[in-house]
Amino acid sequence: MLRNEIAAAGGWISFAHYMDRVLYAPGLGYYAAGARKFGAAGDFVTAPEVSSLFGQCLAVTIANVLRQTGGDVLELGPGSGRLAKDILAALDEMGALPDRYLLLEVSADLRERQQRSLGQLPLALAQRASWLSEPPENFTGIVVANEVLDVVPVHLLTWRDGQCFERGVVLDGDGFGWRDEAITDPALQVAADRISATCLGGTPPDDYLSEYAPAVGGLVTSLARSLDRGAMLLIDYGFREAEFYHPSRRAGTLMCHYRHYAHPDPFFLPGLQDITAHVDFSLVADAGVDAGLTLAGYTTQANFLLASGLTERVSRLDSRNAAEYLPITNQVQRLVSPTEMGEFFKVIGFSRGGVAIPAMSAARPLPL
Image 1 (cartoon, rainbow, N blue to C red):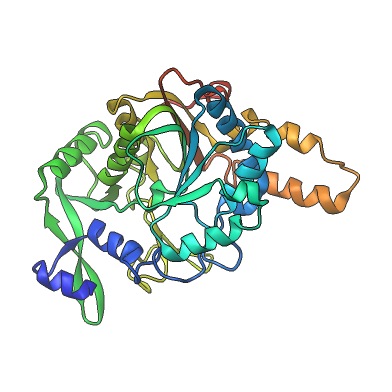
Image 2 (cartoon, rainbow, N blue to C red):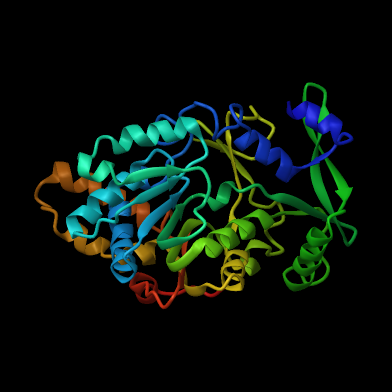
């Protein structure tokens, strides 16, 4: 199918088009097909798979927002359903259950897996979950997305002799290859000129390659427009713009994941591996603010979890029970250590309608 699309397009398609098809094509794309993706038996491990403490800490902020708004929870890209399961259980303990926990999922296979996971909850909790295939037009409450923005399709930009080109995909024998073309999209050219002038000193090094993700901004804008009152928490790995497009980061951030093996070849087993790129959180912040949201803060995952009571939760455990205590301390290490997820992952928060997000205020902020 993809080979036919490339031929029909004159022999060249943008990498964003390629990434969209190999990840999301119905029945064929990585996130639309039936292969196991999450956890030890899949291709990668996300924070909810590491520890239930992640969802329990998120639930503290969620409960606070729900008490202010009386609204619901909307989770994007719910993965295995583990995060939703942990959040609902924690909200129940806090007496802060929403009427509805909405899961936005376009993959029928993943939706079925999420339903099985949430089906393990008591019926009174499981019945609050319902699934959507697109964002609601009007929503009050809190939107949560963990590791969603990194799999939004990106364009590849490369500089040579002071000029920026778009790197796209062509047919190469039985597989795929690269070819650089002049940029034809005016909006993409404007972005390339701004990146060159503001981040690369006006003279980008030759063979400098990076990603640009207008679809990330589009997704944030769409979510913001649907949010009548409430908050939004977006968690992913990435940098602010000045770090993302630093002259020394000349090979970009594109990475693929297959059975816990990370590598840079997006043409390896198309449709059977994950393809990701780091998130430009400056772009995310601008999109949210331009859509009328208030930026509540931007910080590391470690700072956010600590501000959400992670230390207090661990302190309740009996340290004399090594069989219980040691595995959890190992989980905490993975979540907050600077060499693991702690600083690599960031949290950005937005609000609308005067809603407060105390954990974002308490966490040490990072510049954007």
